[in-house]
Image 1 (cartoon, helix red, strand yellow):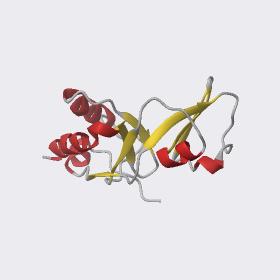
Image 2 (image 1 turned 90 degrees about the vertical axis):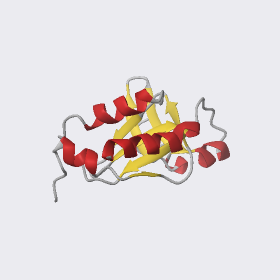
Image 3 (image 1 turned 45 degrees about the vertical axis):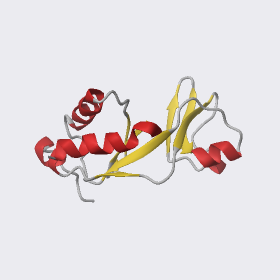
Image 4 (image 1 turned 30 degrees about the vertical axis):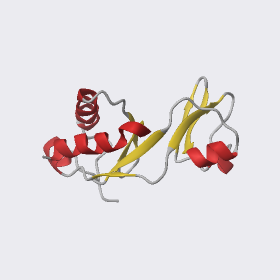
Length: 133
């Protein structure tokens, strides 16, 4: 398996942030385990003491009557970052914070994905492009 990039300068110059299609919501299911709720088509999951958090497409959440507080857009960084890279998450969060944008980062094996409030998505992509600048 090819290992990802670790050098922060190289990562920042190669971010290539792209908006994911659709909108997403975060929801939690107390007492649930991984693999439950596949009908919600989750794009990410996190098991916490309080329950199973899923990130699901908003349209699917609406179809299933789930309640949620905030609607998010996902941004995928198309640079293959190493899970051992140091400083990438901090640099992205700092840049987005300059614009008052919250950042919920999910690291996959190949790419990082940032979920930002839907209304801030275009501004977030522009801010991340500044890091590449």
